[in-house]
Amino acid sequence: MGWANWAEPRVALKNSTSGYGPGGGKLKVNGSVGGGGGYGSKGQYQSTDTTYGNLYGASALSHLHGGSGGGAGTSTGGGAAGGAISLEADGNGTLTLVAGGVLSANGGSVADPAAAGGGGGSGGSIRLSGKTITNNGTIRAKGATPPSGGIGGGGRVAFNYSDNLTEGTVDVGTGAYQGTIAYNTPPSVSSGNSATAKYSNDNYRKRLAVRYDDLVVWYPFDEASGSTATDYSANGRDATLKNMTAANRVGGKIGRALSFDTASSKTSGDSTGQHVDLGTWSFGGAHTFASWIKADEFRDSASFMTLSGSDGVAFRFTSAATSTLGKLAAEYLGTLGGNLYIGSDDSLLQWGQWVHLAITMDDQGQGASTVRFYKNGSLFSSSTSTQTAPDSTSRSFQYLGRSSDSSKQYFAGDLDEVRLYRIALSAN
Image (tube, rainbow, N blue to C red; front, side, top):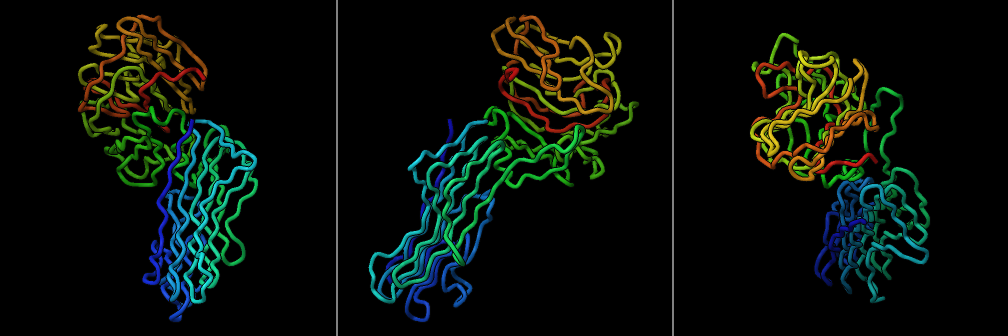
């Protein structure tokens, strides 16, 4: 399954205007022909008046732009610009353009061969995203060459893929009017412990995430500074760093991470400890908490994530008084099945080392759901099917690194790529 987006082409009105769009061609260059529209390259006659026929946008196509129209000449109007197309395979899908197929965002030309005619429109943009992209047909985003007006600049094509690309035939113009072709791929982890990497297209990074549309929140913590943790989900739930500085932004498992360094003597009743305030939003039902965690030490009942209030939820260490140090727990308060506390069979974490933790809970009805703990992608332990998923409710105290229980300690260590889903992810 996939989806498509497109943008409306821009045209020039006959004999009366410059081309529409940020790179529109000039009206009646030297009192005669129309200038070519610009986009991925400059349109012809841009050098005559640099206000027109210009470049804009970026080759990565983080933002999908249409092309720009050619300027009108004395005898004819200018050509229309190429539009914009985005084809995106859902999840880890494959995009294939079959043999003989043509995907086109070419700029429009001018049919009338009269002298002093309008300029050609620029090519538009085509963005393809998928795990594997195979082009057995033809992809076109080139500017038009009219009978007498200026040539339109080439458009832009971007391939966003993770595994393999068969580029095939791609035409974005030639020579001075050649547009751009970009290849956006995710970063690779360069070592077993950490990687510093930058995606060329954040929109591509987001859509590459597992079950992106089912995310409640997603915090990569890749900002270099500031007090905001940007939510990469579609929900826009940016969080606020509390009592933290740029020094808390450290090298992570992928890119940057957040380091929590509150002293062990401080409990959550003291709000001056280091934590992240997630704001207020509704959540309940089946879910998955997932994060890379590098814990410094065991802290009594210290939470990675707390969603307090009625039907409260916490993913945390167990109590030192009741269990082996390092064991983890999923806690659900006030559900239809009562207060629930599900502990892992043994320690999931290794002090000072990155471990990927995922805790899932399905929703099979009262007393019929199961909680599962995953370590580094493998099932670690699971409860019997006697749990009850929390009701959906809005909570006003929601944190990372801090408990809603004033007597509990703060988390000590690093968190990276924190995600909460509204579904129970499968083992796959």
